[in-house]
Amino acid sequence: MEVALGTIIDAIIWTDENGKVNWSNATFDHLVNKHRLQVFGANVIDLLPLSKNGEVVPEHLHPVFRALKHQLNATDIYEFKRLEKNLILEVSWAYVQIKNTDSSAILVIRDVTARQTAEVELQRHREQLRELVEEQTAELVAANEKLKKAQVQLVQTEKMSSLGQLVAGIAHEINNPVNFIYANLSYIQRYTQDILHVLKLYQNYVVETPNNILQQMQEVDLDFIIEDLPKTVSSLEIGAERIRQIVLSLRTFSRLDEAELKKVNIHEGIDSTLVILGHRLTTDGDAANIEVIKEYGDLPLVCCYAGLINQVFMNILGNAIDAVEECSRYYSDRSLNPDCKYQGIITISTASTTPDWITIRIADNGLGIPEHIQHQLFDPFFTTKPVGKGTGLGLSISYQIIVEQHHGKIGCNSELGKGAEFVIEIPLTSLLDSRE
Image (cartoon, rainbow, N blue to C red):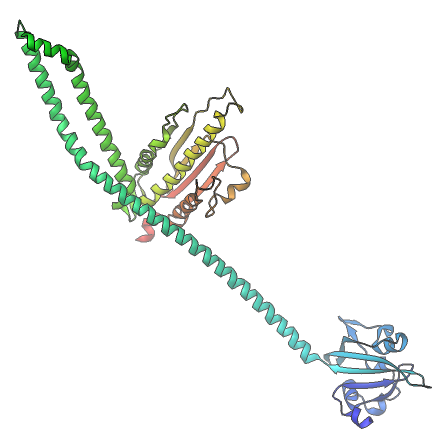
């Protein structure tokens, strides 16, 4: 039996009732670095001082006395210093009492230093792997968000490109006949004046007008025609000129000939956008038209992608009109404020704030934007409009155009009940310089 126990790789000791060694195997002797004769009769606590978390285990908590005093059978992990080397030991103990003998304890000790080190190293690798996975996951999420934004931008760009082509095509088709009409109106005006002059001469020199002609003059109300015909031709000229200006604004807005970086007049872009949105600035009902106040500063030409900048103006001015319309509906409810007469106002101001930057401010006197959602305004798909009314892409795309594509800035100042103001800042030449 003793020979069999001596061959076990775990260290084993058997103590008496006082915790002194009665027997040990060679593995234990080697563990404590003692000769067999030094081990027999020695106190286990002296041979095997243990620590836990860097603190020495007191005598009453040592495994040998836990077994003897409390008659416990258990296993725990301890630290043991041997020849300047720190070992991790797994100690199992058992209370033993053979019939007609005193109590004793058996300790089985296994060196698990390598296992513990491996577990610590494995845990470290797990933590590194977890951090790596989290980092790569975050990168994938960011890449996915970037891809989604790029896809949204691509879709909107294609839409704007299609819109630009449609607008340019319509403008071209309208322009040709309008130019023909406008060019001939001057001749019609001159011919009309000549005919009226001849008719006046005839009336002055003919003393007695034949009855049939006099009857016809009365039937057609010749006096009214003579008075109204020049006015009618003049109205036609004004209308044709208005159509020409609208066509010019459509072509300016589409900017198909300015898809590349180019120095442009920002005010022309704003004005052309207002022409496109003109039908929304006037109302057919009892509500007053939306007043647009322009406070244009003296701006130099700005290097930009004109079509994209016009898209930003379209998005922000469209939102401003929505805000004013919402506020108008709010005040039109007489149960809220029967005496209030609301006048929607959109103010557009421009200025050269520094030698290298310009600022464009578009403000409305709508209901304003709550402070707690202002930080979300430029997030993709975020919208405060009802389902089906807004996509939540307009301001997000505007942010990409201004910040990412033009290296500019865009922000919003708003307070509930006091409207909202969007501020756009664009560098004058940095894009052109970087391209060169």
